[in-house]
Image (cartoon, rainbow, N blue to C red):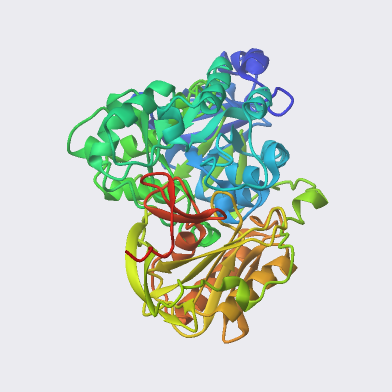
Length: 600
């Protein structure tokens, strides 16, 4: 961050020295707590923390010598003093909230540092969208570091985005004050095959001395993985099993283990530490994607740390994975991630290291939350009109736009079907025998229609295919302008007329998520900013999201967090099958395949 955003350690060192030497009073002293030292893995009782200019000046048994009459006293009362929690890899847009409202939602949960990749908005608004997110991030009372998105589109030639990110964009962003590195390099085949554009983005980041984020979403740990690591990505959050985690840390990468709203990848990987005994310093906890309901009801990084502990991890080791390990990875060990002199005074008071109740949150030396209530303002950026009008369908859609014609004379067809897998990002490549009625292919049983509606350039394009696993029944349709990563519009339904109703409703609303059943709208979440985010409070968005969950259940869907699955069905970098505006994509081969198999 730039000096005018938050004073640097060199700028404040004279004041910190004066306080530590006892020649000047601290601004704030936290008294008599158990100092959880993540550098040494110790728990040291009866310690004080002296704070000056938002940074830590002294940690020791007695700060009375640097306490003055105007020093603010915070009584720890024997509670644990732990560093503010860091989320190493996340997408603010997944919460359907702006950076300000996301910060407001997670600060009471103890998150004081976030490493965010705004590649969702980059796909819609390009470099301008990244700048808006970056600028609002720097306005917040906690640390939001921005990673410059690397892959828009995530799979060139297989999807069309609203804007593309170029190596020149990456090089420009590396000079911005809040840019910490390159966002996840999702085009892993591109890196493995030495694609010049991908390597230029990585080179621009490395030459700026910043961290290259990884994303290797393949179970293949052979030469392609070796080539990817050699290309420069420094971490990976796409591992799903112990072998994935081990392979990454052995190669000098950081294994980022995620617990988000739909991703449960900590339990299956943390055994590399808890059972295999690997050095935990290269393991990091993150969320990746958390929707507003999770943030409001369950927590954020505190939820991840609790989960890691419940999976058998030593509590202080789990804390290291959410504090100092993250800071070290991004080159910020001297800035955040521990309660030690010079660092930003980001401190949590908690009465239990295993249950981790977040009782007091201090960020940059001020109390920002107490007992679940936020105590500070989270300023909003003035988003321009261009960021609010981003749904362009070209024409009003009708049921005919969602028809899929059968081959001449066929009364049954073999269709390639996207199979949804509960709680996982990957899908299954399925095939189903589907009936033909009046020349049109129809869904049956658990196979319903999916459509990708172009919304960036008003082409009027609609790509139709089939999906299985949601369990929908009756006449219904659900549409969303959150459609990772190119963020066209995904519509899933059992009835083409309902699909048209839902799509047109989102064009009218300027973006969001809606569900129709029998011609009636059961739920709507308005997301007017880029069709991805709301600038309303998280509690309001979460309430609407809960109505959406209930509406999906009313239509027969019982999957956990099914909305997240819906929004990822166009993510053409995660196997096996996905849909894009260009067709049905087999991500195992990065080739388009027909929806209807040709008759042999």
